[in-house]
Image 1 (tube, chains in turn orange, purple):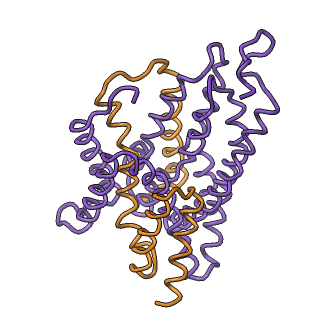
Image 2 (cartoon, rainbow over the protein chains, first blue to last red; image 1 turned 60 degrees about the horizontal axis):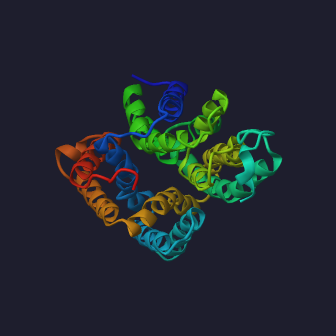
Image 3 (spheres, rainbow over the protein chains, first blue to last red; image 1 turned 90 degrees about the horizontal axis):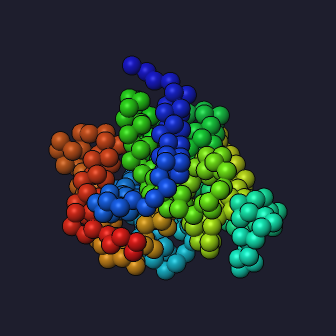
Amino acid sequence: MTHNNFIYIAVMALVSYAIRVLPLTLIRKPIKNQFIQSFLYYVPYVTLAIMTFPAIVEATQSPVAGAVALIVGILAAWFGASLFQVSVACCAVVFVIELFL
Amino acid sequence: MSETKKMTNERPVYAFNRKIFCEGMRDGIPIALGYLAVSFSLGIAARNAGLTAFQGFLASLLNNASAGEYAAFTLIAANATYLEVAIITLISNARYLLMSCALTQRFAPGTPFFHRLIIAYDVTDELFGITIARPGYLNPFYTYGAIVLAAPAWSVGTALGIMAGNVLPLRVVSALSVALYGMFLAIIIPPARKDKVVAALVAISFALSFAGSYLPVVSSMSSGTRTIILTVVISSAAAILFPRKTEA
């Protein structure tokens, strides 16, 4: 079965907005349940980490360049570079390494 | 802060204030620049999923979610079902649920309801960050100032990525395709530096994600499904083993 891109987009938009608007409109008190609170706290880190690796190594022409970009990105972020700086550093590393490979 | 004497009788804290709106725009500039670069690389993923420039523009305009859109595009590329796309969007945007829970506490009593509906449009890591960093009750117009720059940058960048991805040399596309991962790293690494549990989770997630793409059974699942399952399992285990102290 083929799918319609506009329906895909509508589904994404609906879910994205619901996630944001429901707490803002329905919940006026802090979440008390410790499990849910902890779970929600950890989710972003886990899911972003999963999506980053090994995907970053597979995204580039040469896996070595992707791997080095990963390390450079981690180091840059660790030492306080901004979102923009980390992104640019990763791109620059890949570009330079792939000039030589 | 000049906004501290806001609760005086003349203007409520949530009223339009040109100065606060401009502060929002000022703080929105670096965010918009970052979005432009990162969404460009998101556009490359959207192009792989078969989206047109207009569809990519629309998706970004309506979603404002880096990881969520990226994950969804990956699934769309694999001709996944609408339900799968809904679930991956839910999971990879789950953090916005938490951010909205935090933001809802900061609305001044009496703020008109529609402000909540507009703020909900663009709760992202960065916009949430600058909004929550301001002291006291929030003036939605500060966030609106940042949104009027950030949201167009995000959607236009995605469309440009789709269009230019066809034109740019392969080498440049290859380099740009890691911008998004750079953004992810910029989000997860600073908290990992402060919190050992988060650092361990990031390492474990890297390892299991890597293992998952090679192990029999698991690797036959779509990468989106794998992301959902691993996220729920790892985060649940962490929440049970290392519960967060309330209001830490």
